Length: 359
Image (cartoon, helix red, strand yellow):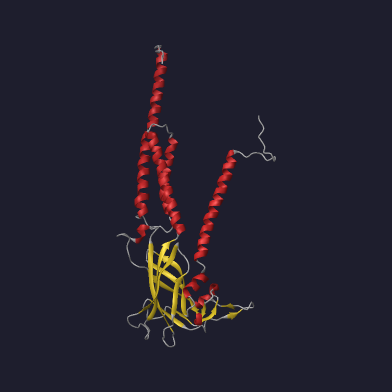
């Protein structure tokens, strides 16, 4: 038996299977690193909260709201947002929140009225929000004392006559809101600079559309009519869209494999009964992969009409054809072969001469 060749350094040569496994492992590691790095870099570039605050403040003086949309409920068309109340410029008692250069803890009491409410939806008082000194010459305070939570309705609209979710995973939803900031002791307006939602949640990414100073037609509380209006649109995150589309393509690839097997059987290619397991397993795999779609609504989406529905019908028809033409034809052919064998044995026993085969 020939000895295995060795490399010049004395290391035995790896088998082809081992080399292929190593190549695939390295390829998967590189792909994971590229995807993770790309999404991390994109996230760091977009969600540096300190830069978001400073770019929105632009050195101005007034109150600001930094929001976190902690729940986006699409079936009920609602969004719940937690607002961090900030002060910028001359309205900042301290600066440095999220390393901001201009904004920090608000130095005046304020009541916030959202969407025409006659009672405050959130309140803040610096005298009850304790600020502590720490040994490192810094400040410490409990952020929850500077926060308020509100519920907002998403815009009611349609996508070419269909529900907005029909366009999943490329559906989007608008949030409109405005608020008035009033001094609770005088009911005078506290100037507001900006409203920003800082991060993605529930696989939805917010994007600012408008941030404008507005006025109410008539005063809601006291004599104040000035307000700040904001409009955001929520898109599904790129990662969730990519994941859904990859699974959608995988389902079509599985469907194509089953169709190829059915066409091969039609062409007369010999197939074993074991091949029938694949179409039946694909029938179960397609809805299972569809269930993995992130936050997917019930059946009836655009991807269902051009994907799941057609895939199930095609795979089912191909499976029926394979069962009839492969699963049932083989026992019949086997029975005919057995009968032919028995006929030959009977002829030999009866002494019937067999014609020579000149071919």
